[in-house]
Amino acid sequence: MSLETDLLLDRRRLKRRLVFWRVFSVLAVVVAALVGLKGAGIAPSGAHIARVSVNGLITEDRKVTEAIEKLADDRQVKAVILSINSPGGSVAGGETIHDAIARVAAKKPVVVTMGALAASAGYMIAMPANRIFARDATLTGSIGVLLETGEVSGLLGKLGIGANVIRSGPLKDEPSLVRPLSPEGRVVLQGLVDDMYDQFVGMVAAGRHMDESKVRSLADGRPYTGRQALDLGLVDAIGGEREAKAWLVSAKGVPAGLPVEDLTESGFASRALSGELGTMIQGLWKMLISQSVSLDGAWAVWQRSGS
Image (cartoon, rainbow, N blue to C red):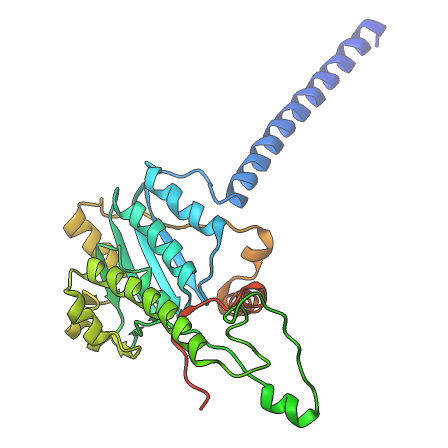
């Protein structure tokens, strides 16, 4: 074999290898881009219905709020299903999600599906929706606000432990763990709770198109089953996601057959903790961290009394 032939064969082999690595590099870049988009919660897709799932304890979360608000201007999102399974949470957290959902509902259809629980702040965030579906056995409502604190002065006294508090005003340390709540402090704190309660009632009155007096008669903090809530006008129908999709098609003209895609703003670690275990861990984490750094925040949450 001549030298010229050898050079020609080597050149062909080199060209095949070059083509292979070029193709491999392009595919690697495409895969990396797709993974990155998916991880950022913006995986490319066509027209679809977005599912926003709110599970566990509700607290303020800037990333979640921003992800919801972006749905309003996303032309590929034709409607939103807000799936709620929550006992409630902080009043401020509920208000933040409520307002974000309202901004979306001003531009496209929003329908709510309630799971086992959609109470207190979990009910609050459903108010801007065009239609609310609940299960027969859903616990919802529980319209109200609570501010709860402990007080251990009696125990400290038995242990011979005292506390010295230097304060700029008589109400600065109300409520306090180391001394009983004063009458003046109780009046001030009750005023805070009453004001937030009035805000909650106003949201329900606006969202359900009810007179405030009617809402107040229902808003004594008690939960209602889905069937009771339907009779009282707190929800619109009994059903789940299937019924919600059918309503979007028949009442809002959303094209039938559109896929439902989950909205996600979380990273790999959060996606790995999916399912009920992940929801439980996430809710516990939120509760521990958020409450530990808050200054006696008020909560709109349904809970059974320990007494």
